[in-house]
Image 1: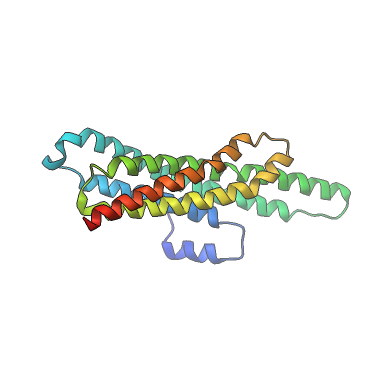
Image 2: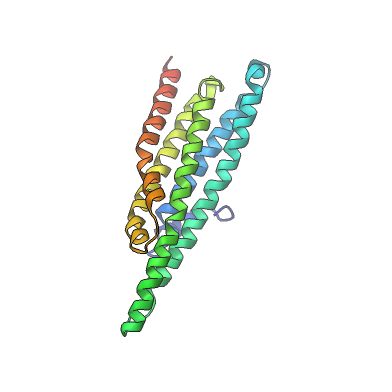
Length: 207
């Protein structure tokens, strides 16, 4: 994703193909959140921020790392759903072919659960970075913390939907879906935290 233009990516998403789709877009939304937080950290330098320089530097490093992980999660999602599409395209004539196709689809859907699970983790860590930056970062760019929270909110909401969509296939395959279900269930509290970040940033802008 990092090597193609926005226009090309939009055209690809609009196509009637399995990937890139919502999971890839969610990865980019999380990556934008990380980039915005990196920008806020970059503006929070100099003598005015000398007392919190080490904290801000650490948050900047984490934001950059999470941005890279989010892009990778989006790419992993696209690859996983390409495999899902290929599995659905397998021959289905005859009992043996049907059984093989069913197994391939199930296996591909199990694999497709990994990227949204990772993205939920990434968004939780992005939330912690936003919460850390908000009270100490440059007030001039506090609105960008809110923008980052909104981007992370969209990303994690999409990741939850995608994960929940794949859970039946995971459980039908006999794979323990407890960890995946717990990840999906954790999103509600994460959304509340992101809303709190947005509200706090808006109040700071209005002050």
